[in-house]
Image (cartoon, rainbow, N blue to C red):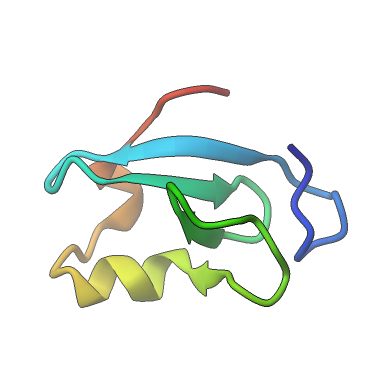
Length: 69
């Protein structure tokens, strides 16, 4: 799916946070993020690295596994 935040420049992919097991939707271009069950919309995204830091995870990209590419 194309990302609505960056007007389709990136794709929204499913990722799993290794530390928590949480599944997120993440744009591979602008880092817009949504919870697994939340609708993908320009108004509902949050920033990936900010969210990961709020979970106590500082090296955010090291802590995810791509479920689909």
